[in-house]
Length: 157
Image (cartoon, rainbow, N blue to C red):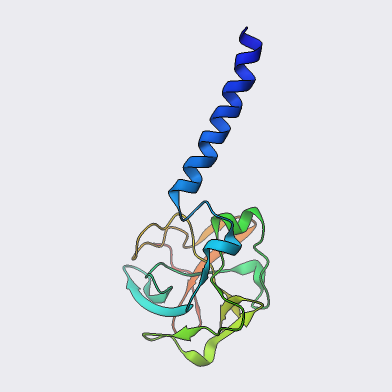
């Protein structure tokens, strides 16, 4: 009897875990669905020990990924689950707010770039003002925030 119960329990636990992830919101839905915004606005915010950095329209910190080499998105698949790219809907263009400079905005496909760096959010940041992904070496490379001038900020918080 135990043999048939164990696979059933594993299956139920897996289904429960998947349901909890989906219910959790920000870290669950496929990146192509949940990270497309109506207006991908890049704003700025001052974060303690880092200074003024780029944030999305909800005030969440945006990061660049060193392996992108200021060219194109390389964080895909499971990487993009932890580091969802900032995307716009087809045909839309990103906008700048705060100290962010419109002339530094661009697109790699539908992913917003700043000074040619594709921009990502980190699922470890749950509220504005957090920068838990700063100076981390995760998913194949280093992650840093950007200043409004487009320069990489390498300070560790």
